[in-house]
Length: 266
Image (cartoon, rainbow, N blue to C red; front, side, top):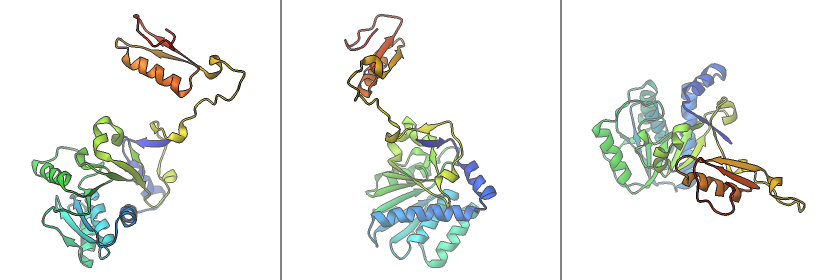
């Protein structure tokens, strides 16, 4: 079972105040985690384009470019010029070692979206929407840095920082996030994360009834009641699913007569 969070700014702040980790340290770990993923998946000299925005998500992308420089044919495409303190610092570092800037989006092996992260609010400009549309059309393996920008970039995988974000699991986001991998930011996730009332169930959390006892009957494996609304389809599917998952007895409760499979009680 994994914790989900509405925001992680408070978790980052805790790292600064309680663990004495700077914003710079967290960013370097984020970039290093992305670089390690690319190194493990793609051969040296692969062409990598990193599309960066003006804030700290863009700064993560610029730091990634610096780490991949020399070993990969890496360049930075600025969807928006750096503005935040960390973005300007990372740009200065990248320029100092010779990281090149790309003037246009072009076919590549790896395309990284580092335009905006979870802290973004507001509307995308038509220019930015156009850039993301071009990114989506490019033939490349697509990586989202932290979250797909505005949930408009269609990623093959999202390398998210520190913890899982609740927004990544909304129905409206599922077509964009691709696979999900959480990167550590200098401390273990178990240290970085706080309590959360929202959880993501894993396969390991599934504990099905073990029907190995010979002297047993349906009542030995629990009784589940499903309450049906005006439309009965979903409740019937839920009841059937419960039986297949191991419930001994399933009762469907409704206000009107429902045509149900013979194995369910009504």
